[in-house]
Length: 398
Ligand SMILES: Cc1ncc(COP(=O)(O)O)c(C=O)c1O
Image 1 (cartoon, rainbow, N blue to C red):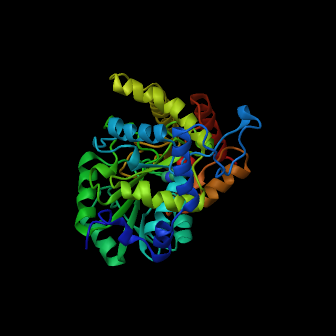
Image 2 (spheres, rainbow, N blue to C red; image 1 turned 180 degrees about the vertical axis):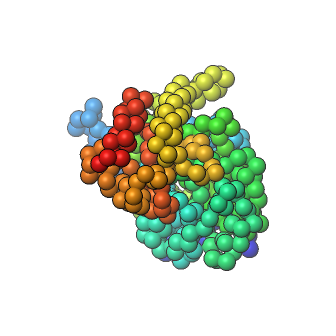
Image 3 (cartoon, rainbow, N blue to C red; image 1 turned 60 degrees about the vertical axis):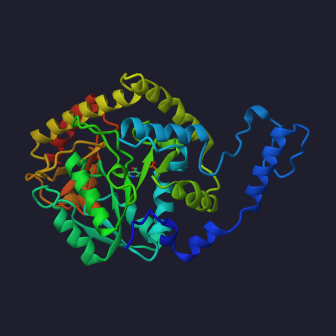
């Protein structure tokens, strides 16, 4: 076996390889015509499939298939400055996408078709949809044992026994908020290299880490085995802008394979979303370059830490703090235990809270974690968390 990303084309199913190898005459002519027009302003371009020059102020033109050059560079810089990325990561290693969802979906179409894809127990339930749509087969594995320890030997055994060739990892994790220590991430990287398993690392919460350990992308540990997916939705406050990215040490993936596959999917990522991302990310990168605190990330991390702590305090008062050995040290989510005073399971708890008009949460069974409910503090101000305290008290008598 060989490292999956050394020759990523060899991993593509035949129908995806056909798309990657098919010529794109419109794009090719447009590129050549653009160069000709730059060299000679009298050159007439009649290859353009857009309406230009009728309402110039209102026009939002197509962008390049894998994203605007300055935005790709900015994302590469984010990985270099804040996620341990090597100096070799440049714009060509980045493919902008319509949210992380599109990045995940395209990568799964490329690498999961006809393969077993391992999903951790306690995963974002949308992964099942993406794997099914890509023609992969889900197998669920336990990343942590009951004590919350990352048991690499047990994980390796499960991957081998299941015949999994791809694993989808998500740290910091939705729904549990779990993060990996540096040693655990190194161990995981070594395991991927030993098994030649490809990891798709969903790192949309990469910078939202509250334990003081500097965040690090998993691509650092195993650049020939890990593709990272990220997003402006969470850490840069732009979920509606639908702007995400794929980062890979092997530019063949981001600059060639995804260029073709993305064009066949959405043609090009959202230009307005990318511009909005740069508005937020630009000042943060500038601050990092000057050894100052990034303004947006710092504010977000501060607010989320405060909200998480306040929520845990409230949950503690109601006997709902999860017994899970891994504390919620990242994301905007945590799992809470269905309290002993409630008669019923997690689905009944979530249902009663909602139908009594008190508060909402998501049953843990939706993530393969029965007996718990997922709470998000992303949208809860400290005042609202205080109100939640009263609502949980009211549920006791509802
Ligand atoms: C783990 C995880 N991955 C991906 C996404 C989707 O990200 P985006 O909005 O960038 O598509 C979410 C959104 O909730 C998520 O929790």
